[in-house]
Length: 259
Image (cartoon, rainbow, N blue to C red; front, side, top):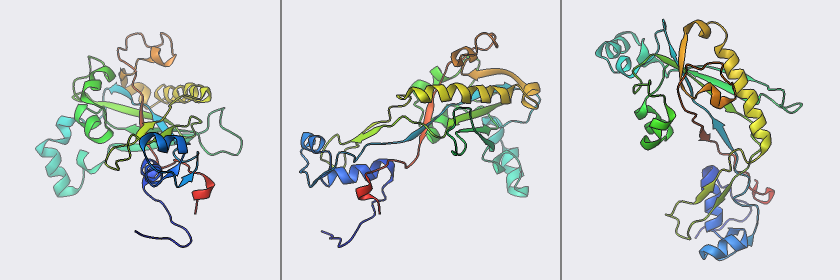
């Protein structure tokens, strides 16, 4: 047993910090009693205010551009080019550009509320599964039938909402520390976030409608513009709408627990 005389800093991440406090009996009494954890301090705020950021993969076919494909990146020529010169497809993370901006809904005095990243490539099932966590069973629902496992040259825009108002929760599933906690991010539960996404997707489409992307893009693999509220602007596109997320350690605990 370790005793602390003044204060302790809990640094186990957005989910792990809340789980650790709850397992220690610090949190909402009713939740702790439900899983059989004795209450040491009844603090209703522990595990609340989980903040996460939705991002969307907006992938386009392109022509006349040397975009990364799986075949190119895994070719002997690419490996040799990187080993000898430190150049080529293997010298890049493919995440080559990012832009920040403010939508008309950004609060006064607040920094950028939108971010759009650019991947020079269309991605494939293995990439999305191994690095982002998209299940293989879901992959087919995210991409157009025209998209053949990352064989086509493409670019992927990644719009993201930087200041969501929706808040989620972290709760215990068991008193056993080895059992993962219950995580409910409650994405888009605040209608203001839906309004913000309309502005963010509009900004992303404006980027595609301008040079140099305008001359390169030949079609979209995911999602279909009609699913984004763009009507029949691009009726030839055939794809489905994915929404994904990345987690950031912004689970705010009560001020009582802030060092």
